[in-house]
Image (cartoon, rainbow, N blue to C red; front, top):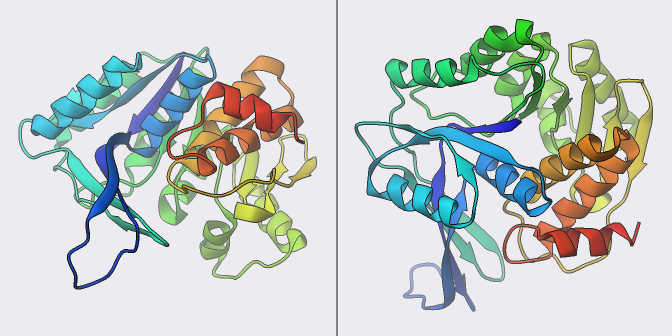
Length: 300
């Protein structure tokens, strides 16, 4: 079974404004509620691709109840931990000529709640995959990723980590099966601006030396670079299309990669399916649908 963990889920209030103006009254042309959080996005796209998973994380208040009910209505399996205080955050996504995001803080996660998560994860085995994505609330220590992976290292569970800088680096000694920084995040880890494939590959090798098994670097419109556990470098572009949405594209790439690897065991195909899934989300208003993904896959 695949499990995803989202420490700070959200209801995403997406508003479309024809010509957004600051310091003025703006009226929407369309609006919708989406169920956000990087791990939740991964679970949703896995479901769309026919791969079951269970979404774990923390919820609170009436916003948390709305998020859980919404996810269950889509057929997504969840096993959230409920917090006694606070509210699951609401993020505002403004879609206009440019995208603007206002992200909420989220509730305080107590040590008791963390213990409940560790208890759930303690049941995982070598047959399971754990995907940890995104940031953690400011009230949590940056050691939280490291502590979870240390707990599970001896159980043979495969880990996927999609986060930034300190959170990502803290996971490397536990040999994650896959990490997925983008090229900017990769440069930030080493305090450099990476401009060429050679520079990106060099830093991907360093992350592999630090413990990662497979390093998938997303490069926006320039595609992606994968350094696999066999030391082979795979360079791939992206299909042509009109970008409508950047939210969830990286999460969709992770979901597509894992789905492709589970289906074939082939890293090249996994990268192709991941790229198709990420592009399908970028080219649509919501998360990638199976038909969109396979239509794009045929264009590689």
